[in-house]
View 1 (cartoon, rainbow, N blue to C red):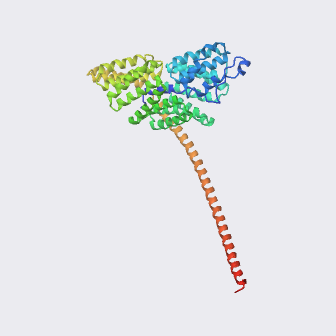
View 2: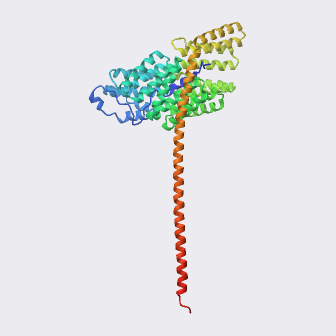
View 3: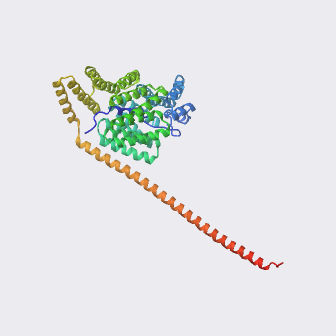
Length: 474
C-alpha cells in the first residue's frame, strides 16, 4: 500500500533547484552584442560562485548594490536579480524568490541563454513551494524547451528533476521514475558532481515515498557525501532532515534525533530561522515517536517561534497536523481536533492529487479522534468516507508498474556498480601481477648478485691460497 502522507518530503525545497559552480557560472542575458561582451563585475562572480556555501553573506553583498542596479545594462540587471532570487531560494524565502525572479525575467523576455532558463526554473520552483503545480509545470516546461534549444545539458538534467517532481506530486510515479533514471544516466555521463548530488537527493525522496526506505537512505547518504565535498551547507542540512525523517520511518528514532540535533547546532550558528524551525519540529515529532511527550511539547513551542518565517501554506498545514498528533498523545482530544481542522483548512483546494491524499490522511486521523472521544457513529462514518475516497484515488496497477520500474532501475544501478567493482578488481589484479613481477625481478637480481659474489669470493680465496704458496718461506 502506498504511503499516503509523508509531510517532511517537502524539505526538498531547501535544495537548490539548479546548480552553478565556479567556472560554470551562467552567462548574462544578452540584450545587445555590446552588453553580451561586457564582463561580469568581480562581486557578482563571487556571488555566483559562493551563494550555496555562504548564502547570507552573499545576499548582503548583493543587496548593497541594489540602489545602483537601475543604471546597469538590462542583461547585467537580469543576472544580478537572478542571483538574488536563487539565494532567496536557498534560504527558503520563496515569496521573495518569486517576486525577484519575475522582475528579472521581465527585463529579458526575448533572451535565449542560461540566465533565462534559471529564471524560468526559479519561478517554477517558487510556485511549486506554494503548491501551484499547474503554473510551476508550465515554467518548468518552458525552461526545459529553452535548455534543449541551446543544448545546455546541465539545465536539461535540472529540467528533468523539476518535471519529475511535478509528476510525483500528481502520483504519476512511473513517468517520474523514468525521468529520474534519465537524469541519473545523463548526470553520470556528464560527470557533474552537483547534478549527481541533486539526482541522488530526488531519488532518495522518491524511494522514501515508494516505501523503499533502505534504498532511500543509501541515496540520501550519497547525496550528503557529495554536498559535503562541495561545502553546500544548506543542501547538507536539507539532506540531514530528510535522512533523519527516513530513520524515523524505519524506527531508528534515536539516530534521527541525533541528526536533528546536528541540524539544530549548525542552524543556531548560522542564525537561520527556517532551518531552526525544521530542526525543532523534527525533534518534536521524533520525541513524540519516542513517547517523550514533555520534550515534544517543549520543542514544538520553540518551533512555533520561527513559524512566521516559513513562506509555504502547505507547511502550515503540516505544522497543525503534527501539533494535533502531539495533543492526542497528551490526551487532549478537543485541541487535537481543532488543529486537524486548521490543517485541513490550509488544503481546501482539490486541484492537486497529492493534496487529496494529504486531506485523506487528516480524515483518517479525525476518525480516530472521534473514537477517542466516544463518538463512534461519527468515527465510523468518517472512516467509511476515508476508505471510499482512498480506493477512488488508489491505482494498484500503476503501483505495480512503478515497483517493476524501480526494481529494473535498481538492477541497472547495481549492474553499473558491479562493472565498476569488476574493473577495480581487474586493476587490483594487474597491480598484484606487477608487484609479483617486481618481486621476481628482485629475486633474480638477488640471485645474480649472490652468484656473482660467490664467484668473486671463490676467486679471492683461490688467489689468496696461490699467493701463500708463492711466498718464500723463512
